[in-house]
Length: 451
Image (cartoon, rainbow, N blue to C red):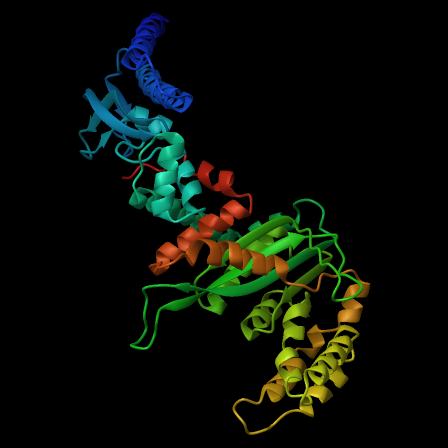
């Protein structure tokens, strides 16, 4: 209590001094904005002083002679040493006890270990908030925005590192999920967690990311960022395709990675186990006609209902319609009829209409390609049956995920990413969009101490 009283008195004197300096340093400000900026700067100084004092109170008045070392031997008290912390109130200095082990010759700071302090690095809170900015905008813009908002200076490189650290932590979470999903006792325990869902949707897609990884002289470095989503919804598809579509996704979680399909399938399985996909009463996957998507679904979730997104399917009819007749009216008439047949489940008529316009042997045989597409995916296009059961038949949720994760954040003008950086920033943004930010950042409040 004596130390608290003394530091409280000192802080009171400092408050008085800062207030005096503010009011006398600029007695006639030109605007309220100038006054606000002065008050903010003064509050930052007070916050730095207060945090430094609070840390000082965490030290023992008389440090013990020994402290357990990580190797198990007793470390001996050596001295009080200064440290520097980069925090949400700026750069502060503090002092804490330093112990040196005579057995392994490693030093330790008990206070740093206890509070998760990171001398010379961003504090956990500063890392979290700077990374939160980094998942929203390019690091250069984010650095300027962050300083204007918080008055704490942070370089674009530091924001990049913080964002990747959160993405790296999400990678570790996913590794743990993968291990649990392959471990039968863990899997059995997850299976008993709560009642099964009535219906769960899964969706997979990919978007392009420009990376510095080139596999040959003609490779420009564009790589597939594969994105997945799990969600629930009670919304039903419209009665007619031209009516308004509403998905109203609930409990939406995204996951993503830059890797080959088979490896990505491990993440599809692990995240699905976490969401209860193995025990849900109805599991529905919606996607375009990409072969890798349906191979993964069939392998990991053979019980799932497979639905090709209506809009992707209908889009294959538009270029074929340009081959029907010689006038715009004839094109439109063909397209209206083909779309109506597709919507109402008359797939044989759709295939026949396309086949009649095919030109076998030509590289630009648009109609022939459409025939192959509808033939290969016909069992995923029973739209009347899906609508009758209230299934969503549009992939807007996953397309939104690709846009928010890939297009809006990674496809910024002039950006070329190293592969790991792109992966980790994408994973950090996916965690934010999925409501997993607090779960991930909480794991970094007390980082393991390096040996």
